[in-house]
Image 1 (cartoon, rainbow, N blue to C red):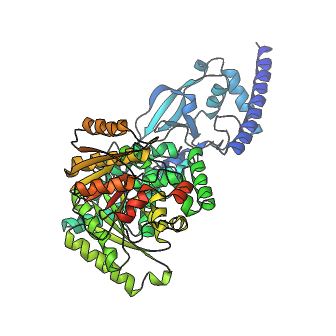
Image 2 (cartoon, rainbow, N blue to C red):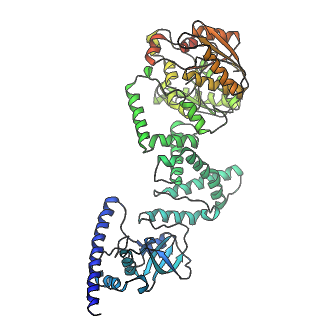
Image 3 (cartoon, one colour):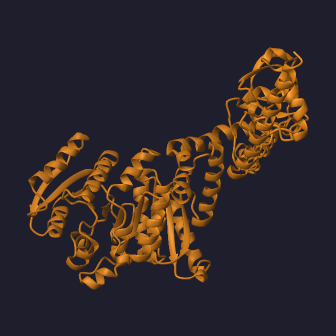
Length: 580
């Protein structure tokens, strides 16, 4: 027996040195990966997470990999309980010799916080048990309660976030008011922002209800009416895929901050849906998002405005159908106003659309310099816009911006669903003049439908759809179907038969589509020059709205040859709704 003891002890010492080498490697890997190899300090965790109310000791088996810290020896072992000090050799080896099996030693003593355990007595026993391949160990467990969940994979840096979360819950009692709530975050400082949101919400609740709102009531109402609706948008948009490793609460804060920045920049109220979509488009680290952003910048830098083709046909429709935010297509309408008397025609026409759609107006006044933004003329435009919207009972807000008119409209219209633009200068018939036409550039680049408004105001009761079977005409067919159903207006569909482009089957396609959607329409087949046939049919049927697709040829061919769109724009007395 005396000869066996030294040999087993020597073997135990070898095991200790092997464990020490593993500890050195674990420390190196921790530096390379950025993940800590340190045990957590029980006292530090207890204080930061406000753990309290311990239960009586219970004897049970606990998983060894759930032991993440120690009461007094958190600096003596690595995160996987490998020994860090050579001075531990004697004691470690003795425990290893005694541990022929786990029943040879008394149970360890641990504290439990959440799903994690901290060793009070038995650090060396835990270390040896892990090295011999055990997965469980018998322990006397004393459990402490905390508002914040703690898991075995918690890192030391995570404690800062969990401490902030504990303070947040202590202050708001949200875990008691809404037990199902999980407001975990991955970045420091988020809970301070959440508490500011609650305070602001409480203030406006008090104004709206004309009474003092208790903090507890404000917390619950904020969670139900502010936080959860934004989280629902985050889920519907799939934002967690765009920002991997983040939480819904992270994204709630980012969407809210991005929304506030956009409203300050644009001068308009922006919905959480639009803010969430733009946040992903502008800042997502996903490769496809990065490539898309880079491609847009390159294309914008190298392509002159006159030759830019704009977004592909159908993109707007797919975005609208995917969002499903409203039961109407045109909930927000952009209307540029120049301040000149003729420029107010577009606003009056936009008000007609807004009444039918129960929509809001986003006014845009473009000036050429910063000095003009706060000028008396700009203030007069603002006052006139506000007065006309109030008189019509339509919500509206106007932004004054500096830049080129067509470019600013194209930039701003993506925050809305429709652009209603005064047709002051339609594209000229000469190729060079067409190339420099701001209205032509607007139609090409605009990612939303454009309602071109001449001088005459239209009630928009009788629509004419010019249909040639092209992808953009299909978008016009979709919009015409919607308007006929929602607005209950009459619809005439005209197809101009042209060799190689349109046939009788083209008109039949439109007829089948409308019948599928239970829309009744009058169908007309014409021949000859397309623009003349469209205008002739509109006059015969007393149409007060023409709906058609945008430019069909490439930008270069459109400049050289002209187009039906340009010809109708130059001649029509009715508003034209041009679709992508």
